[in-house]
Image (cartoon, rainbow, N blue to C red):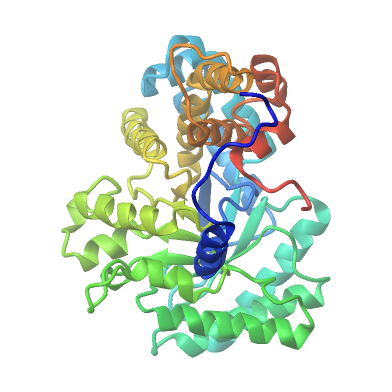
Length: 427
């Protein structure tokens, strides 16, 4: 059949047009609810520091403490790899990259905590701490010492602490505006969410602040912490977490799993509250499905076993933390909480090993897909999207370099963004 010959059809054009018209609302709903990845960098972790403890030197102090832990308990690549079981061919590169990360950018995401880590204080004291936090964050952005993501966790929307939480947020944001405006990388966290109405209240609060200061609508987003059973399954039997995302009206940036609050609310005894407990896996699976395609990201929780004491104790805690981070990464939870500076070496070791050990295979599969060269694995467009996302996350955190990816794939960063379905920068 020639290229321009007409093929026979049976349906009138009006049938196609009517179907398109009938599905127009569905098309619009899909575009609104499931916009896909926002195309921005996702931090590999979040560090929480109480509001009265945070200082201008906190980020550097965490990095120095992490390096000191390495020097004392794993002073070289062979020792570190031996503790964690890092493959020999990756040991040197992972160790060198971990040390370089701790020297250059030890904390990717820092939350100044005015909730559980801060507790109840006299109003004047919390007022002063919130104002001080704004001053320090603004100064850190001016002098280049800020973590890529920084912000506060306010108290929740429950009646007992609601007014205090709103006031702290107001003071912090007002202080930032007075110091020059809201910085890039600003992150706000709303804890202990159980009802969509609490998310709606946060939306109203942020919209009112934007209106007061003439900011664009939607400038302020926030994280939702999943710490209550009601946030997963409501009294009506519905999956609440999907309703929380909807109630955020596009402002939800991520869902953070709260290991200990959630486990305790399920009746799990303290000795068994952990990231890998079945109740945690169930909650995170519901979070994952609810957030898929929405552009809302996921963060796992933390371990409270700290790498302190004798070297044998530190090594045990490191192995536990490293294993939990690896487990989370395999389950597509690319972010988690770190509770102590000595957790940073194993956070980055797990992350870097995860991305480096799969680099060549992922690059080869993606290159074959782009070249339509086939190979021993036949990948679909969705898998190519996942492969690109894997390489991009490795680039963002410093696990791999763009020169390596370009050599192995022949692709640029823009090529990877396009294959991953991420919007072009400044688009």
